[in-house]
Image (cartoon, rainbow, N blue to C red; front, side):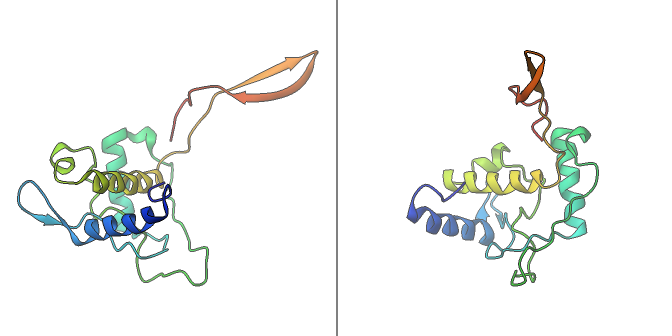
Length: 154
């Protein structure tokens, strides 16, 4: 988790998120906001954005990486700030590993943007699948254990 290792890291994370929200100068001279409003606890994402997320997953990872159906998340709290969407990239086509984007961000901006991008993508990806091994001892089922690595990480 970004911001979890030191008490001042949460403040730094908010500062970096603010920079990503307000916009960073790209190598082509444009100033571009990379994430949506970050002071929210909302889970909702618009239908148009969900389609864009799923298109990006298909392009970057293939159709097999997509969840079979669109996942929509509801607020868990009555007091959730529903006026905003969930924190997410403004444009999922701006992948964090693109050389021109990566070279325009500080190390902290790059880490936080990648975290937000990957978590947004994960919200619409297929579930992870694990192989498991069943062990029989003395003819009795004793349990199963996950085999490493995962068959599909989701």
